[in-house]
Length: 430
Image (cartoon, rainbow, N blue to C red):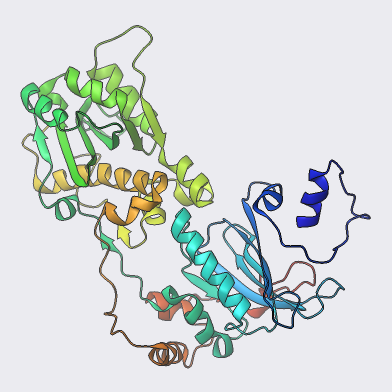
């Protein structure tokens, strides 16, 4: 790729017959930057050299793709390009059917320096870009490779304990319950002077009276956002207010509003039912979370099709409880709201706000909400304890990795080794 980019920069377009690997030349940001991305993936080429005997210490390609279930395998490669390194270790995303890491190394060990460095860089990319973290990995031999896999990806040894999302707990107080114009104006004034306002938004409808009836007019509007570092939320009784107060309309029009099917299910009914008509209609800056999550996290749309799935992908370890009330039959016009109904309503908006911050501002995601409690306390042990824990975790393991990690029964037909089709050209491990 480096040679191709250099020749292309000079104005020539190499054919496959003309392309060959010249003696190594240290790449520059400009030359590597000319390498075009392939298909819909963002590709990065990393090269690292040292004064060691090998001409190449290690080199690898890393791609920004999402992964829930991964596979890893090594394959032998032939060719004059690599005099010392003949093994390619491939870490494969079963979700995206694309490699996360493809690295030439000196051995097939999980502790090979080149593979270790590649995994460390990929982990840094995951943190920086907000890609989904791996939850399960398939190995040829769990007895041989399991401890090394846990050393490379420590999260695989942690039990998955999802913590229920709770706005009241994270904010330290319940949301504001607003049913007067004066209270609305006071709440909105808290955003005065903020250059950018980002809100998770959700609405609830008047309950259908009979099975098959369409929902009635919007009964409540709930929004959640941040004023600096302070988490704030409010539920507005549209039934009591009748129309959205002008101050809130102005805030909604200048804010970024995030949700799932937010235009169709929330903003269009809100404008049609609870806002005065204006020429050209009301315009909002809305963000469809499934589309944004699919693009940022490199996931297929069905994987982030609902608010629960978006939250799970953006904030692993957080769970949205949709069973607090029967949303289709609950009387959302009741005011003041019942405690469970209030939690249900504000948590939906909170989930949208968390997901938007996570996707638009990965560097702020850690501060968006308290992290869920760890499954086990870190005792500060060193590598010896980690290796012992990995050995204990994987001891007696033969196809039951999923059951031990997730506390779930083993499937009736666990995947076997026959799905691992090694290929000299594609690295196998798929």
